[in-house]
Length: 255
Image (cartoon, rainbow, N blue to C red; front, side):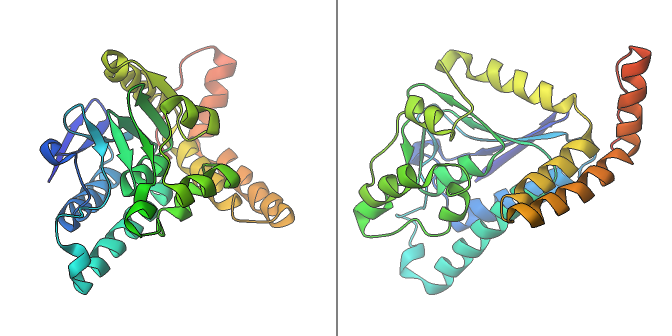
């Protein structure tokens, strides 16, 4: 269900059911979870890229034809795997990119928004159409509410209206919108830019970024003060400062 490839420090996880618009079946979610763990544990991987096979869809969301809604066990496994995947992507410490090569709907839209950077083709459709079939986008709300302004998000979830990539860009749900033939180049450039940074700084920075969004101002400032101290004592920080002073490229150790 998922194809996994590692090349030049980049792990690419591809949902591989293009004829069905790459839905999120239980097996697909479990594969995504397993490969995400594998990528996070691989010291040669600096960036994770999530995408869908083909050119029609990044991910069409829940597998409505797969029978999971007819099985309490199937629904439980699907929800648990999706929640675990979101946690791992957000807390895993390595940067993530969504290569959105087509429609990203429902859970697929949540998967997209769980990534740090989102690069999207200009012909995609994005959003949460679940309400049209009498369902509310519950789990993905935890991710979407940290990405999209509340008023716009609530309207989208209540009406099922889909966003154009330009609208998603204006709302901050997308990082870049490109023509389909420019997608791979844009993703490669973003991955190379991320891979060139200190792994230690990215991990600490990403951890503190997500943590502080859930805290009040006083607790957030206290937490960030500790995070700054932790960042400054890393080997990468000392190497980066030395490289700046010596006018050379830094050699990151990831420590």
